[in-house]
Image 1 (tube, rainbow, N blue to C red):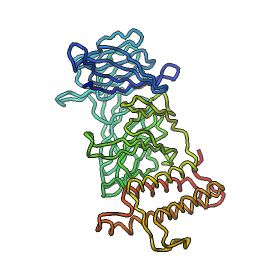
Image 2: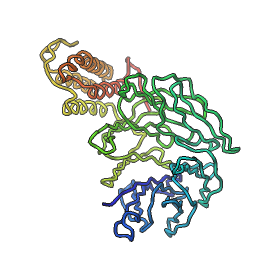
Image 3: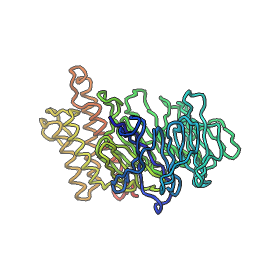
Image 4: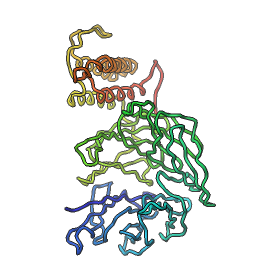
Amino acid sequence: MIRVITLLLIVTCSEAYSQPYYYYFKYNPTYDVPGYGGDIYRFNLADNSNELFATNIGRVTGIVFANSDQTKILVQERSSLLVMDVSTKQMSEVLYPIDEVTNVIGSPQIGRYYLFIDSADEEYEKTMVISNTTMQPIDSINYGGENIFLSRDGKYLYQFIPDSTGIFFSRFVLSNKQSQPSTRCGSLGPFPTDVLFSDAKNGLALVNYENNTKYDFSGLEYILCDIDRNVTFAPLNFPWRSEAYLSSDGKYAIIEQVNYDTTRTSGEYHTGIVYVFDASTGELAQRLSLPPGGKILVFDNYPQTFYYYNDSTNQSVPITATTVMPLENLLDTLISLKHQAVTNSWLINKPQHEKDEDDDNADDGIVERLDRRLDKAKDALTKNDSLKARLELELFVKEVEHLYHQNKEEGERHGVQVLTSEGYALLKYNAEYLIDRLPEKKGEKKHEH
């Protein structure tokens, strides 16, 4: 069996000098010691081309990244950190011995890379400072761990501190190597659960927490923190198990719905259902249905683009974060989600036996009534009557809430719910995202970009 280790290329240079490359290592069983030697491949995420980049590298065990003009890359090979010249593919040793490089972040302002290193016995965590021109070590810092990132000006290292009373970060001053106590960012909190870390870029951090004690993700909220300015922004609700990223400029929150599948070794299953929000306002920009099983890759030198890469098929989908979906497309997405809920048995059709606001046929099925609401909303949008579309969608949400809450107790008794929690979240929150972009009264404009 061939074992594959995927390795992310981290780039901080301009587009003139780079392509969005993704490097990965694959064991080659034909080498002298099967299972220990292998090759590095380079995949171009922009055009889906793949090449064998370097052969018989040894046993690559860790991260790969590039310097600012992408003329050199660093490779962790067992206990050594090696630098490779991209043009000649010659290697030389940078650090030895070394345990595990857990993360790399770059500071183009001062021409340095920070390599975060954990010891195998967990006795220490430290940071090695590498010149981005010579790619050689120039300093070391007795400061490390998880969830560390740079300030916008490159003068400080911030570290997120999990807590339930507020959102906290510690600060390390790079000029004098002094660690400062953790301080609160913004005034939010306390929270029912600990705040957790998702991603960070240039003094900005995306964190999450649950705003209720159900622990079922129904109250999951993400929030952007500007640690440099001690400011937090509007929370955005995302009621599903998920993973989240910041675009490289920190303007967008990219959140993928991640389901839990007990039949899989890892448990988690990447669905390819991706939402893109304005990170500071919480406004929905896009909802994407991508092939499942991929991963989201963000590059510093492509601030308006991210890539969805599937390593099993070697396929990449480039996505422009700044693209805002038209309202009609969002409504078509909601209609397809309703069909998905029926297909997955999250929504069961049966007669409703009661009148609705339009006094329509009381024996209409549940699905027919929901379809009618969505059809009326779509017809209203076609006629540029966004107020009517908003009204129909609000009635749609009201129907969904009624179905879920009124039938929940009966469904739990009989083992079959008309609308499951999965279907409820799928329909309610996607409809509310769309409603939020429609005006509340005539002449009002909402969420223009």
